[in-house]
Length: 96
Image (cartoon, rainbow, N blue to C red):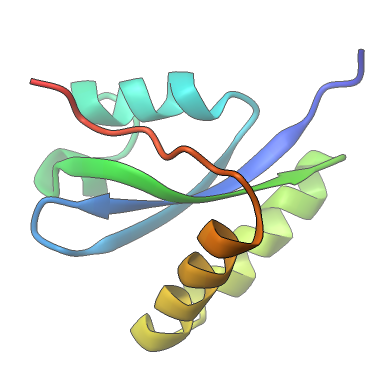
């Protein structure tokens, strides 16, 4: 089985969007929730993963992350909306 890589966007509790890449989205989200994945998500607590896209290589996932980070808020929201309606995707959420 080939290893897959993913670019993702997390919505934070203060309505910010954080973008990253990983080889295990669920595990990475858990790390963000625990405050050990990124400095940004320590200050802006993650609410849910709202976008995820699969890639064959780490390089492709990193390039997509870079592309997304250059987008404005409205463009990111359009990307998220298209992703959620275009496929069956169940975002991860914080559970109390």
